[in-house]
Image (cartoon, rainbow over all chains, first blue to last red; front, side, top):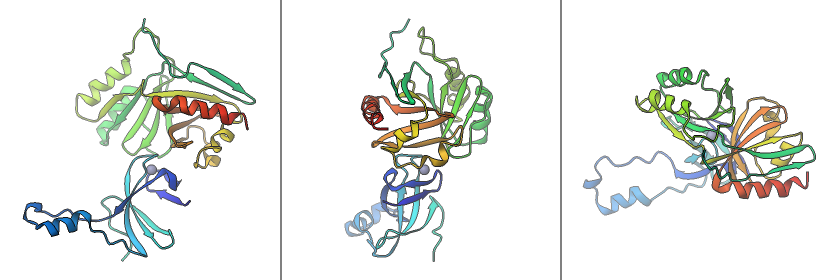
Length: 91
Length: 187
Ligand SMILES: [Zn+2]
């Protein structure tokens, strides 16, 4: 159990949230020009980092807004949360 | 006259705690972002939509609860007569907001069940099944939260000292009602 600071509602317990996978994956501009391999790369392949990862989360049982999170996957420590469309607050 | 079928239709009294369903109560979801939207809703309702998170504002006829940066639930302060299920406020808002494209108005009167809880033991009851920290919430009149109780989504409005209005989706209302009654035996 850990506490997540929703950028809209404030600190709430983890069970109110849902994780949405890796953040900042850009959809290719011209999907029709991609090979199947490149398309699969975009669609399915994720870094699955051990350590600090940028992720999408949604406050599903609260304001139902999506936001981004900087989380260490090895110890669940949350370093930052930031709204959709904002730049990650780390290097 | 309309034949209302309420979901709960019951009142329970425990030590320092009373729970019942308030019905029929008009409930509307309003969504929008622009400044014109906020001021237009404000004019129609005669209250300002709260823009501070987890708060509410109340006027003579209706109360508005903050749900998210672009979403509010508005509910009537008084029970509706059972002659009709169309509301003056709703048609006013549809004219001023929906029809002008400023935002969206949705009638959720029958989607949400409103439970009224009174007594000193309200938060002892909630604490048995909710991860939300009610310490600050219970001291702040008008506070609003969306959270889960026994894994059921709820909207809670701190109406007054020791008085709370709770909104739950109708299909979950009997399940929540059973849980509230069961848990109230142990507080
Ligand atoms: Zn939130």
